[in-house]
Amino acid sequence: MAIAPELRAQILRLYQAERWRVGTIASQLHLHRDTVRRVLAQACVMRGEPPLRPSQADPYLPFMVATLAKFPTLTASRLHAMVRERGYTGGADHFRHIVACHRPRPAAEAYLRLRTLPGEQAQVDWGHFGHLVVGRAKRPLMAFVMVLSYSRRIFLRFSLNARMDSFLRGHVLAFAAFGGVPRVLLYDNLKSAVIERVGDAIRFNADLLAFAAAHRYEPRPVAVARGNEKGRVERSIRYIRDNFFAARTFTDLDDLNAQAQAWCEGQACDRRWPEDDRLTVGRAFASEQASLMKLPEHDYPVAERLEVHAGKTPYVRFDLNDYSIPHTHVRRTLTVLAEPALIRVLDGAVVLATHRRSWDRGAQIEQEAHVQALVERKRGARAHRATDRLTQAVPAVAELLLRAAALGHNLGSVTAGLSKLLDRYGAQPMQAAVIVALARDVPHPNAVRLALECAREATQAPPPVDTTLSERARSLDVTVHPHGLAGYDALRTAAKPSPAPTTDPTVDPNHPNHPKDSP
Image 1 (cartoon, rainbow, N blue to C red):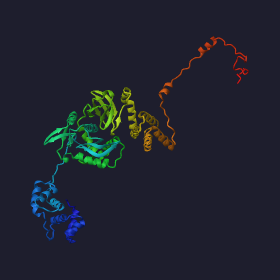
Image 2 (image 1 turned 30 degrees about the horizontal axis):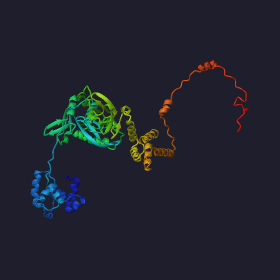
Image 3 (image 1 turned 90 degrees about the horizontal axis):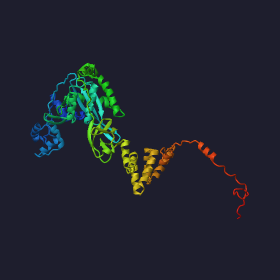
Image 4 (image 1 turned 90 degrees about the vertical axis):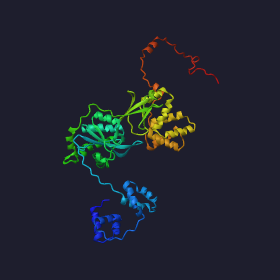
């Protein structure tokens, strides 16, 4: 442990001027006695100290020194076990201190300052910045960082994974931001770049080699455990943590990437250029940009491609979520092309479905046409479809249906009644009402309706209006066109005149003087 000059001077003053003992100096300055003795020995001012008591480890010191010389990184616990097998009876804590005093220290290594030509090299790495919660999913927040070695221009983009498609997409966006491609890119030993190392033999990732060939640059991995070879990107990630990400607030991933782009083009470019104090990183990048290679004429496809199997239901699973497909393509192996905002499902070269990508977990993303076609094909699926819709919108309905089945209720009528209540009141009030009905142990739509009405009256809200029409109402809702009455007038004139009514009270039963039957 290196001793600060101020602390060294204080130890020497207390020992020589104040005549403190070694133990007193160590206790007052919160140091170890051996640290104080080493400082005094280096200054050649040690007075005659009483001889140290012999240690139990003294007979074993030659063996310990020889073993540590041969195996410098051997742990103290393993060396203690070896010495105990040879008769040592001392404790492990004191022995660990003895090992620390005699363990050989590695020699300090000097490094040359690496200098590169403009446009010659860039360094690439991932940085982990915690996690981001999206619905029920907890996604890792990864930062793709590329740094031009000459100008120190930084490109930064965040993603919710570190897969190969995100890795290559970061390259494409970085090249577009730089306006060109460096001739050499340095990589750490991550699986997206290096699949396997055997000595000096390296097996690159085939996707990265194809991408590098399309962009005409050389991928070059650094040596194992040699972070100094890509120190520019390592320091840039630390700079991003301290000067950009610390205490940063954002609404979603798009907002974070927009702030990262503004920071890279603003504050990160305005910092001092290490090679010349008179220039900024932005001005150094302006001079380097002309030395970069041109971008390829055609865009390189970087979407993630995955083979998936569709089961009995018209859905395929990708990245913890289910996406609907036409029911005519179940029980097949299909292809998913995934981008950050879009999912496409293909059967060969035919696009079966296009969905918005969900980063949630356990979500069911569907097109109504896919499911409706299956419902129309199988009438028996209507009840199951209604149940699925209810449980998706109101999770507590699953427990209510189980209790209703246990009591012998007709599940079809129960499901139909709950579906009508869901259409009228909505999902959130329905969830609260179902919980109330379950608490009262009345698993029936009437109990749910009563809880909904009680909640509505408590808030003095107007009653919901049912805008849906029944089948009979829809059949009666027709437009009636009035007809002309000329035909009826013609019939009236053509009819014969009827005989005049009689006034004889004995004949006309309605005459007031008609004789009535006697009682």
